[in-house]
Image (tube, rainbow, N blue to C red; front, side, top):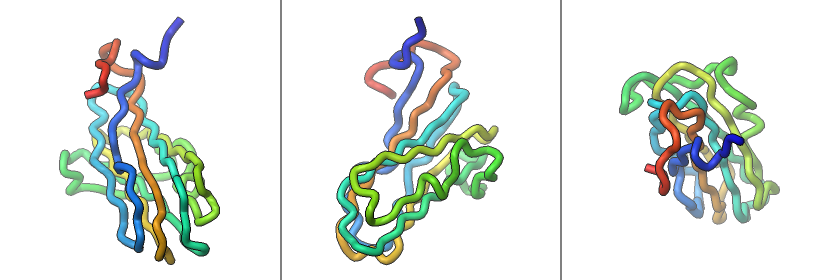
Length: 140
């Protein structure tokens, strides 16, 4: 039986943060080299502002610093950015967005709007289908 534990690598994208304004939360660049699949998991905590919205954007490119970044075409998404985005009433939920494109690097950005109170958010990237398994633990 195949196990998930030895066939994934998890990367920090956005550390748990309490965003109290409308500054975009720009995630770490994720390098897909050696992995065939990628899923982003977005976790919310308390979202205190009564009218805040949080819009998700996924970009990809071939340059390590993403100087060539472009919004990912919908054909290369598993799910949609709209379904991964969230609003003030989405306390304590998890959202996901997958990538099936052919670019090596990706980056997720979450942009709050109408947010004046603490909004707790974190994001991890789950890399799967490794070229070499088992993957290391703890993840590298």
